[in-house]
Length: 559
Image (cartoon, rainbow, N blue to C red):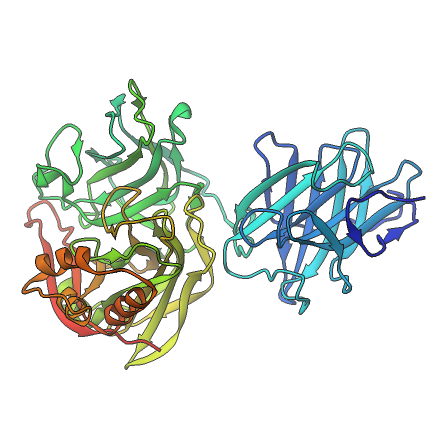
């Protein structure tokens, strides 16, 4: 018996075994699952354990061969792939391969995937297997805290032709720590939608639409314990992100819908994030001991709903009613959740040179002023989840914690960032940030396809470098972000400038090449950082609404 391959070196590992359902142990409980293709033909279940072993169950709608693996960039070249199936006589085949060049499949000398079972029925093939997160085989790709690019493929029979079969690629974060089965739903809950109402999306590449909406009116404390996006079905590719910001109870809020950051500054009021969603994200449920508080005199009564539309094709006649659905309950939890926005202050001086293979930008949060800005001492922040955000040029984000000028460790990171997968991710363990700590956000950008400078801004073709840290207990700090002294950067690049505006304009006169790109990156890292801390004072209605901003010059701490 033989299996046909195209340009394969080595012998395919065959297991001439017949699989019987009777007498076999029950399959392992796998907490996570997702379809890997748009037609729902390839279904993946997986989980990992404390021994750094990850188990996969791949179910494919075919009675032929199936393949699953990891790719450096979402394509077959360089991929680490396992292939298996069931022959018509009931014997099974399974082996670990890697792709060399564009069209060469080679079997690994070290077989690092352990087969648990392969079964087949009238319509589907199911393959259960496991591997270590790191195998020490140079032909295998490690499973890390980064976004993985998964490759799946299959054929209609057992003649394996990887380069001719149906193939799919999907970005997925595999190192999840909490599933819906780990969460406890309250016995009593309500839902409430925060949505636009038949908004006519303008024929513009980028639009930030904002409106102000009331939160549910409740007579006692409730907790928002879950939220999910509600996207108008035909606009799924149009909506880039949705953010809900808490407003002060005594603030004068405008009516209607307008540009969030346009001529009317009132539509940019309210800066403390309540919930957020971005492209590729799903619903999110807070841990069982924490949720977002509403209903007390110190909780917000109104929110600002912000929706970012990316209408690159300039399609006219689009009507949208997207937003978020919140789930809230009178069964309150132990802690109130807050969200701290960190990273690079988007305006006015963030830039990325053109033609850069890699360019790192830095934004510093120094929390030494938190007590003063908060109005009362700020308790330790217990961080349990995070969301990272850049635009199209982003390739990686890292958030680092410092205390007393010493690096404590990495809070979170994704060195394989994918713009199309921006989701809230749970921490493995609660991380504590103390007042006085510094948080440095580092973003890695690539602009090889760009001939001009990329400036920070709201458009998808502009850039951002942000990290949203989900924590408890909540305080009044909404954001803490920094940006480098642009005059210092301009002078290092031998450009004349007397203020920040001239410093940014001077970037257009730089002869950008590999040397000047690295010089600018080094200068921006060494420069003093202007740190901007924003607070919102959500007080009883009789009190004054206050948005406070302070700045101070600080030095970036780096390893």
